[in-house]
Amino acid sequence: MIPELRTIAAPKAMTFTGLLEKIRYEGAYPTRERAEEALSAVLGGLGAQITGEERAAFAAALPREAAQEFTRTAPGITPVPAAGFVDALAARTGGTAATARWDAGTVLAAVGSLMDPALVARVIDGLPTGYALLFGRAQLTTAA
Image (cartoon, rainbow, N blue to C red; front, side, top):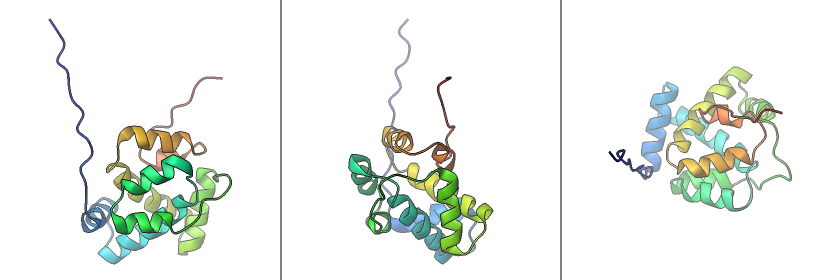
C-alpha cells in the first residue's frame, strides 16, 4: 500500500488590513492603531537584522505597506541577539521587555504565517539564537 501523499499549500496572500486584523486579534490589541504601531516597530527593527536574498524575499512576501516598514531601516553589519532586539524594541516604543516580547512574538508569528516555511527557516537560521521563539517556533540546535 502506498502511503497517502499530502501536498502543502502555499501561504495565502493577505492584504495589509487583513494582516493588521490578524495581529490585532492574536495580540489582543484594543485598536487597529495599536496593532499597526506594533507591526511598524517590530518590522522596522527586524529590517535592520536581515540582509541579502532573504531580506528581498521576506519583503516580497509581505503586503506592500508592511514591506515598506520592513525595508525603511538599512540592515546593520551583524544582527543583534534576540534579547538585544527585544531590548531595543522596548527602548524604541517606551515599553517594557515583556511588552516588547509580546509585540515581537505576535507580529513575527503573524507575518511568518504569510510566508513559505522554508523562507522563514532560512531567515531564522541567518539570525542569532532566540529569534525562532519570536517567530513562534522551536529553536532547534545541534548537540555539541
